[in-house]
Length: 437
Image 1 (cartoon, rainbow, N blue to C red):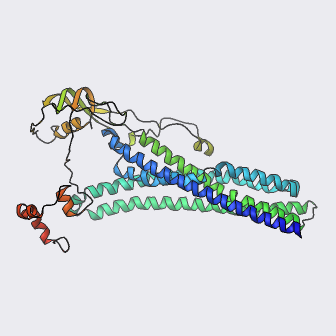
Image 2: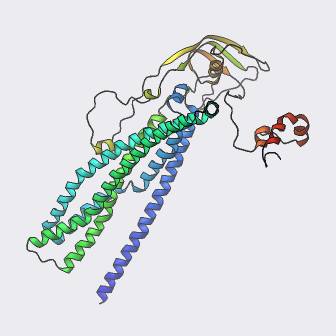
Image 3: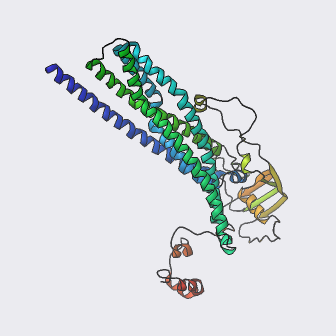
């Protein structure tokens, strides 16, 4: 009686320790995952400011948003289950060893079924990997299409092209939904096989144990069932772990390709400070403003397909494990640049007002790009002193109120705004409440 009570308390204590340990493990794993997602978001956002003209042609706004949301979330989901990649097989090995001590060689009959299911689930995981790559490509295509639509919404409204663009986005979305549906079906098949495998393994093991002339007693059956229940968690999580790791590997490759994209030269300016290798810091001279000597500048000439050489030549087919542990880096295409500005020489002194005039396509915007470091400097020197403010040709507003967009950080002076800028505020009187007040 006392021995049974001690065993019951021991089992209860073991389960309590297991519950607390698992809770702590997943809590810390999800916290690490959140930190990974925050770090990746910061890296992608910081990298966007350092992209050169070639890098910006390769990665549009929609792709950057996809990297910060979808890919970062997938790497976040890998973190809690990463240690299960080695602990799950270890639990299976220990459980099989203990089962062998209880039911003898009959356990190998159930193991044979598990071995048969491994290539099937490997094939399913491979199909899911291929579909995931296709899904990410379609997501990027849809994000870029929506970005272009939002940027050109005024022209679309002018020419009543709404139906055409709606059908274009709908066609991309249909392909995405079809891929998601296919990926979901393969996931259901994988979960069905792995979810039903513990029951099938127990059934086959007990059947072989009985047919070989052994007596299946209650003590043997319940002990074996307890071990089969221990095997249930690693068997159920193993396909999910493999899927998480494969998705995380795909996301990691995409992030590596983005982080290796072409950047601006930190030593672009002749008066660079040399403080950071990733920032265009400058030493300012109050007696000089902008100086360009013998400048030769080029714009990048690359397409979206050039950012990663996806077909570098015939390669041997890799297994699923080789794809998971593949350490090869993405092959970047060689940059191509077109010389745009030649023999640029000028010296602008502080306090000077300079106006550049010329027809469309004469290089006015390119000249500003050369001053700001957006172009590739083939030869010559550029000096930029003092603080720089740049207002591009694209209209934009701050995510704030109308007053904040008009004042733009300046203190509000009601008398000045009412008396001196009546024409500025007059159009708002025709807007519905509360904009008219």
